[in-house]
Image (cartoon, rainbow over all chains, first blue to last red):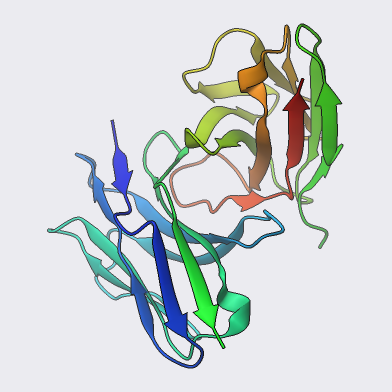
Length: 113
Length: 115
């Protein structure tokens, strides 16, 4: 079974600074997808970014980028120029052949003014 | 395009009752998945439906069931409610179940409180 681990339960960052959230996963599959979702206080789960395992190039979406290290099974999220609206719980998630999402335990990110 | 919608948004039930939650996927999406979110267990997969067929099921007791209609709308039912069923139930839709490439988009969730 696949597992996803987020070792940072809470993090904080000053507005306009950069922060990196860590995620590691375990799988024996070769074809899979990795995602970062954010869940603000409204509890709506919002897709931030996704990475296809067979692509070596790291995905980027505006201020959000990932560092995907396939051999190390590591998938970290970097948020640049942090904004107050980035305050949320961030979940790393894995999707493989079973199509279901396996989530990490989440990292609560607080952006400080 | 309208996003995933879930009804009701909030629900209070008592132990032993049953409850039905509804999810309408994004137009054109044919796969619907359900997840349970609790503070203790985090986010856990319940089941996935595609073309009115359950394609995958998580590790939940038989009290949890679901179905999908021909218009891709889905319902999940929980019978004989227990206190531990109190949770946020999230529905997610994707275009198809053709492989791992489909991204799942989530609804706002239904908060269920069992007293």
